[in-house]
Length: 295
Image (cartoon, rainbow, N blue to C red):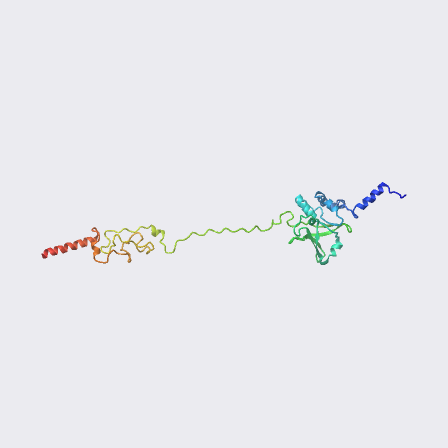
């Protein structure tokens, strides 16, 4: 009869078969380093520690207590996104990073796997500079690579690696303000009101229009005086030196003003009260007197 294992031993065997080959606890691991207390607490508050512990291969880019303020000052929902940007879904230690071809590559983060990242927001850009400095930054176009690797904190090849970086990595627009620095949308510029229409060149000025023409008097010219019914010059006629639109000038009618008749009969049609009437009447009486003397 085959021997049976004690119940306690059987439980240990089953636990070993069902547990990951290299289980780890990020909270316990970071708890061994007082310089990362704030970062460790942020991972627990954001419920990321459990997600990290469920992974078998992971790299955590941790910041010390002095730099962690750049994350704790963010809104809670943004904190989780930024913290997940510091969790790379692969194992990287200093040796593996230094051996990367072309000294630059894109790293996939836990933020990218969450489905909340857009475009390249969930990727990290790693670059090894010519002086040997290793830097990280968001892979978003134009984002700075200003988080330098300081040192390796802890590693368990090839399951988990904790690397210290100098500054938090915050992708542009992670808080939903990607357009905050963009210029405002172009608005149509309101057209300036058109200037008021000016009067036509040559039109009579208000002064000319308001100045009344001198009225004709009985002392003005005899036979040269215009007929009372003769029309005055047009409104667009001569300027101030000539007769105005309202009546003839003191020196007589305009040259082109029409007359009723062109014969000597004009004098006979002149009004009795005018000088022309008196001359005609006097001439008539003289002729009558002469005829009477002859008879």
